[in-house]
Image 1 (cartoon, rainbow, N blue to C red):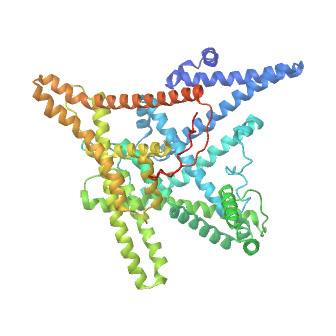
Image 2 (image 1 turned 135 degrees about the horizontal axis):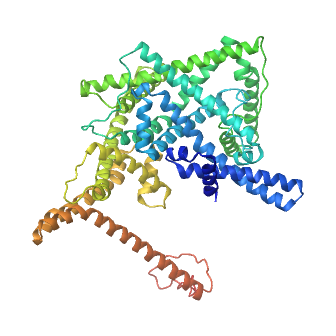
Image 3 (image 1 turned 120 degrees about the horizontal axis):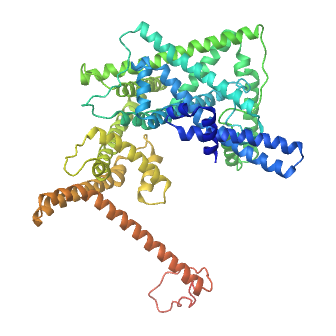
Length: 604
């Protein structure tokens, strides 16, 4: 119904050709139909209010709320990230030596894929921006970010907010969000690119063009960057603590320079008094009774979880002279800081990665995802090493040598585990996936499939991550137990023998058997049967998916057999079971004088 309403309206208004040129005729027509339906419901609701049809008014109001919330969800989750993604792409065209004409051609060739990729980039940008706002709330005084919604507020309910707030307020908030996000993109992407091109004319553009001899496809590299590199860096606790420490240092510096310390961080004396009072209360509780300490820790942990995004509410502050001018200078200082940070992030990792990769590849051009990932990890390792050395320096030379020895042994164990679990296993898994799924679907029988080890390894990393996540969410079995134990031990307490014996060796053995047994059957046993060359080729190409189908069928059959056994036991117990009784277990003895066990069984 909404589609036909929108279609008739667009045809009547003469916008049908413009909608067809967008390549998303069905989606746009349906959204227009929902908008017209919402307007119609508003008009009918007003008429029902005038004529005092209370039941009709209530029904029309509920229908309007459903349509309103649905449209607002589409705008918040679909349209806004799409706008951010396209704006990011437009502002970064010079960074990749591209033009709007190139984007137009790519959109016309694959409109669905282009829109999805831009939506994905915009969603990632919005997510990391929201994560940074949550980090700011942990540092700043409660009430500084009063104009931004606190996602950790227990009273915040987005659906209820969509229902109660009028449309014009949602529209005003949407326009304000677009302006803020777009301005940040201009400040941290477009302006730094212009500055880099003027100061370092040969640094840009980034090399993202793929050649025929490229070892890994662009999609594989982007997936690795989004799924492996960024989470590995951002999920580390010390990385977040570094960022939080930098934000706190910048806030303290700006507060003392502009006399806004009370406004940004609150009064330090009150914080110290409250902290001392909390310490005294905890000490008093420990002196009264030693048992509630555990409960106190649980309560503190619970409160820490609730207050993770910063305390909710408002904290008073001291207002200095010329307060609006100081706030303006604070905003200018913040913009300059963000610009400098963006310049460093766009140049330093790529420059370090290019310099390191030049020792391996020489003057050949490398995809910038290689260089950026390499440079990012090198910068992270350098900062981590400096912080560790600064923490170890006051402990003396002997302790430093002991720590270096322990860390060297730990690094050697980690490298061995990484070669096995992040090198061999993903390579075998990606090659098996290529043989089982990709090659039978993409390569005809009269052609020879080509395998790229680097690409198979890249996709194998993603497959291994997905399989590990599914295993941890599934039922309890040996692989889940081993993975949980390895994760609980961590890197510092890594047990090389346990990992190799319990995890690496069984997994690699299963993958090697899955690769070798079908190949031996197809290349060694089938030719001995005297079949034709075409049949040998058919068996060689289709034996991997055939064995996969056999394994899946055996798994389904075994699962069904177990289910039928459980059903049989359930029916038998429902029909014949009279009652259950708990009986003490007594070990049988060889003596004759031992009394026999009671005749009653646990099931009657």
